[in-house]
Amino acid sequence: MKKIQFIFFLLFPISFYSQDRKPISIKFHVESVCDMCENRIEHALDAKGIITADYDLSTMMATVTYKPWKISEQEIHSLINAVGYDTEKSKCTDEQYSKVHDCCKYRYRDWE
Image 1 (cartoon, rainbow, N blue to C red):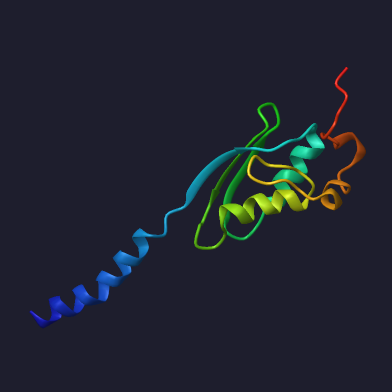
Image 2 (image 1 turned 120 degrees about the vertical axis):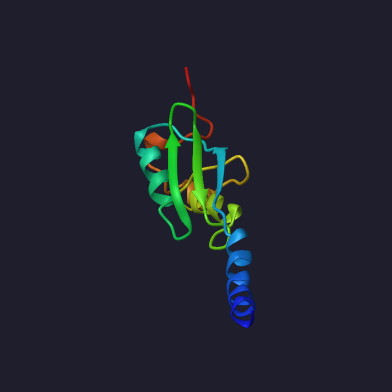
């Protein structure tokens, strides 16, 4: 009986701990213009704690699966802001935006 209790107390914390560690998937809008934008956004999401990241240029939607104990949703948005793109939850600074290539400028764009 002591062996069973010992094994239970040894395994209980592991099973309890692992239940909280589930990856989360999110989908959100990111402003962009072209394939170069798509590459920059996906490259920015190649970070510790992000399992998968895909950006669909036609819908302007990013889909990210990440480990919330390693990176937060706000940090994910900040990674995209850092390369010069606005998301639905945060905007990049003018300084960050100025680093975007001229063909990728999406603010105040004349679509005529």
